Image (cartoon, rainbow, N blue to C red; front, side, top):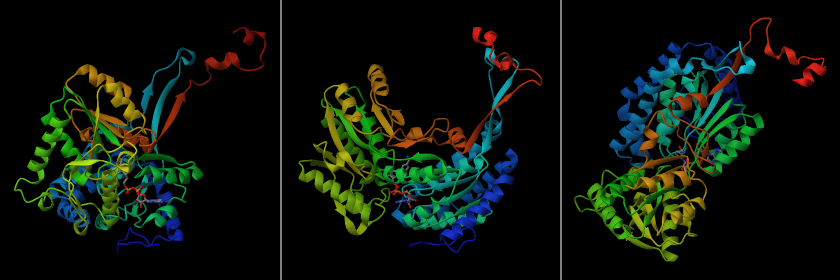
Length: 475
Ligand code: NAD
């Protein structure tokens, strides 16, 4: 079991017996957390927020050491995103915790009913490597807001951030409430044997199925935030300069290693050449303004490791062997785990780059003649996590939003929908089960207890009590 155990109080050696002890410790504490007030939960969240504020440089350094993530990208997508989630939870927690009254149907006249939110108990958060801080701490915020104890398992592929999260959790929380367990898939497998009350998993669809199978053993509820191929459709009314800018940003942030990055483009054949020219210009402006090559840019991250670099290089090579051509970019450097943003034309639809989630800065471009073709192309594949629509035509917008099932969608932008705290975030089918962020995250980690209060000595159901005489049958 290759593990990286940080010398931290809340980080434990991950053998099965130690994991069981940690789980029992949290199970014992979860009863006390169940009775806590909103003020106590808010204090815990505030401590987390303050630690992040005080350790911004450490967070930036950890992300840089793991895959040369530029500080500005870390600020926006890891630090700001996490703190915004915390502030939103703090602001709304009292209201979220309040029992939600519901109306009364005629048959139950005289009763009162409400939904009461209670913590699920002890939860597991399993995080991926691509936004390794935000995607570990963001779900933790929801788990704590809902009053749970939690074990966090960061990704082993970003060891710098995993160690930082272990340190954060040690310095901010009591291990009976929150702990970090570091390690690889063997450690994850051992964790998944435990009877958690909820498992919040972010990662690939393949591992999502393993998690769901393990959860079934204990009938634990799951949230599965998975991936897939998110298309961007650009019709012939779109503002191409604007679209190019937003597509390049969405594709190249985190070097394309983003679950909701536009995976491939479907562009109207009339505007394809112009869009590609706009994309070329934006890439130059964003990453090569000095003409020294994108590899010299401080604004472009690296592929996380050699395995993922080789996977992407293979996708590129395979596409070219099968007739695809490179319209922009194309250079790679194994020593630096660098892959240049690359626009690919004519990749066959059965090539690996059009079949697998790309998760890197390769951008295949397909064309369509009418919107129905674009819709059929997308719907022939598993439901995407996100769909992007670039258009100035309201009818086209309605058609695409109405005909493509997806976890989420953005019109005339990419990615930013996930930053809206009032929108549920998640996938559909192969791209995920359940919803995250804000109130939706709070609900995911809560048991929604349905309560009906009857008046003493009264019930409208009395007339149906046995014995079932003629009188009852006639009703
Ligand atoms: P992954 O599925 O390989 O790993 C995720 C977690 O699962 C890690 O903590 C890892 O240690 C653990 N794990 C890996 N193999 C395991 C196994 N066999 N058994 C048990 N646990 C195992 O995913 P990744 O490579 O870290 O992340 C990339 C994937 O995550 C992409 O598909 C991406 O689209 C998806 N993703 C989705 C979202 C979202 O919000 N929907 C966000 C980020 C990433």
